[in-house]
Each structure stands twice: as C-alpha cells, then as structure tokens.
Image (cartoon, rainbow, N blue to C red):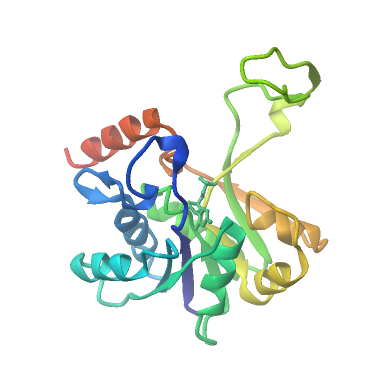
Length: 235
Ligand code: C5P
C-alpha cells in the first residue's frame, strides 16, 4: 500500500529570529520546505506529499512547489494550515484521498532526514505498529524544573530523569491512517507530537532508530549546522 506524507509548514518560526516563515527560509539556496518535501519523496513508498502552508501563504507555497522538481512518481497537494501545529496536521489529514492507509507526519523544520529513516518508519507501520517514531538517545541529562516566573530567574529542580531510558523524538512519525484520524478526533490537549495523541488512545507507540541529520532547525545555530551538513553531502 502507498504512503502519504503530511508536512506541517505553517509555523512562523519565531525562535529562528525575524524573517519569512521558517519553512520558506533558504538552505543551500533552496527553501527548507522543498528539502523536506524531497526528503519524503525520496522514499519509493511515498506517492503523495501534502504540504500544510501558512494560512495566508498557500498560493505562494503552491508556486514554490511547481518551480522545484520532484520525482515523477510523487504527487503533491497544498492546503492552508491552522493556529496550532495540531490544527495544521488535521487540515492535512482532511485533504488525504481514501487510498492511503499509511500516513507520515513530517516537520518542514527537519529538512535533512535521510531516506533510510523514512523507510524504516514506513516498514514498522507496515509490520503492524499503529504509530512509529524515529528517536535518538540523549547526550544531555534532562531535569524537570518548576518553571521560573521571570526570565533569568533560577529555577528549582523537581526531578532528574534516568537518561538511559529517554529518547529525543524526531519525524517523520508514521501511522496507520485510521488510528491517526481517530486520535485527532479524540484528543484535544495541546501536544508537541502526533504520536503522543495515539498514546492517549491507549495504543502502543514504538520507536525505531532516528538519525543525527533529522535534527529540527529551530534556533539560528541549527541553520549553521544544516548548511554544513548540506555542504558535506555535496562534496
Ligand atoms: O514550532 P515547532 O518547531 O514545533 O513546529 C514544528 C512544525 O510544525 C514546523 O514545521 C511548523 O511549520 C509546523 N507548524 C504548523 N502550524 C502551526 C505551527 C507549527 O504547521 N500552527
């Protein structure tokens, strides 16, 4: 069965600094979103990419996609996004044609994820997992704190989590389509990833190995790293 990828790309990217919406910032001269779309289309299993554009930017995103080559076997659709990431994903799901039973959700902000990671996620869904996330062990120790009221105030530590049991979760996250649609209909809390909505349904989410190059471009330093990864690939 073919897979479709939904790419939420409607965020402003305020943490990256002032400028265009994050997904439209250039990386190696090409918009980050185009890299992300190509990363999904690189998988032979993916035959449709649904891009969720900034609410007022769908026409711009459509012409951007028209101007950049994709593999011939890949179709794409552009739909306007919503206020929260979850709204954007749901609007993307609403646009999916019925024949797609496997759905990937991939952040536009992870433009450099290798195709092997994409394929590993799809494979695990095909083998029967309702939800699959790529993830990596952490380098940093993680502490829970009582968040400070004011910026720069010291924050009391509440607990130290056991690092060896923690994973930093990336995208694409892969889903049995029916499960993801049900999760979006059922869960209304604000969440930071799609798989956690499936966890809230009481279903088993599984982790497959992620990749260093699937990091999220969030802060200005991440752009420096992304440019370096691209330059190394082009050697
Ligand atoms: O803010 P964060 O880095 O978690 O955003 C992850 C992804 O979700 C980005 O690709 C961003 O464009 C997307 N997003 C969206 N709609 C929103 C907010 C974020 O599509 N309203």
